[in-house]
Image 1 (cartoon, rainbow, N blue to C red):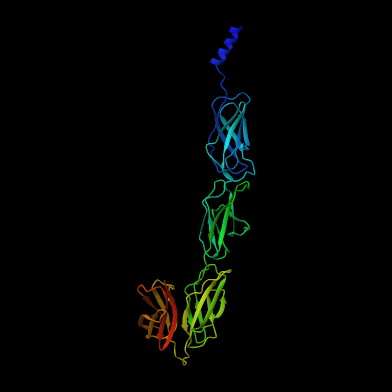
Image 2: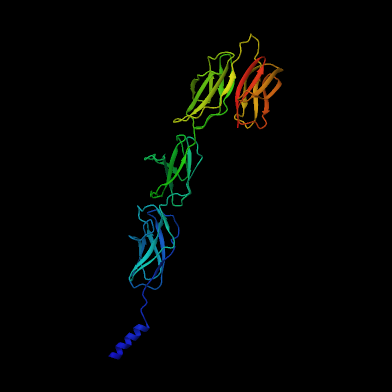
Length: 390
């Protein structure tokens, strides 16, 4: 008997039983994924498990930790294979999830997956462009798992966000109705086809100052009336307008819903100055460069005005600009002068004008940046306006 027992021991040592000792969890293909969808988890074993073994795929928390793993799928098998798993509804948004496969016969914990998994992934690569006084555009990179996006905004530092806006499948959204010169937070989240939502991704930017209207020009001049026009300004809710007799301390202030205005009740043969500002709602722009002109003189019946109105463009200019004026007489002698803020003459020319619209191109030859005054003289009468040189 002793010899027989020793023989069994020798056989057991010579031919040991090979048990499952390791499980290798392969890379999870695809993604990012939405909660509620299925994924496939492939795994390899070093040796077969015991009969009746169950392989179970487990999901980590959003930081990749398996402190409390979540079972997401299983298969009764003894060797390498593939487990079809379902990601539970309600998972937190994250990009560091991992999976692993464990066995129960024998009990073996496999390695975690080669790659991290994004579930309910939030948008990335945010940027804010097209920034103006009243609007800004939020941009983000497309997500394969997203069926749509939602966005919202707030004044930076405030506690409450705006209601959400649907961006559809677009990867940008332009927020309008913002306040000028204000810091804002903008954020976007992805929405899966089954309405699972990602966390919010945030970007910040400041709107620009309320833009000052440009190119304020006098378009028509009468004895007691004048009309002025200026370029449309962005983000406007209307315009503030002020004028006065040149040199007077007090401005007369008006408003205009459009980029033009008609003045009445002026004095004849009087030099006037006007400025315009943009009303952006919560703030106003700075006042524009002044436009200066002179109302008409009284004339005898049949005495046509030599120059009834004129304009300067572009304004502001880099130094080269065009003077356009309307002559009421044929072969009229017209003098054009340009002076700086100190009254110094920097340009002077005389021309013979044709009846109707005339144009004179002027180049100030690298003039110093600042405000200049352009004057047209004809038949003892003057019209003036201002020019900004950048």
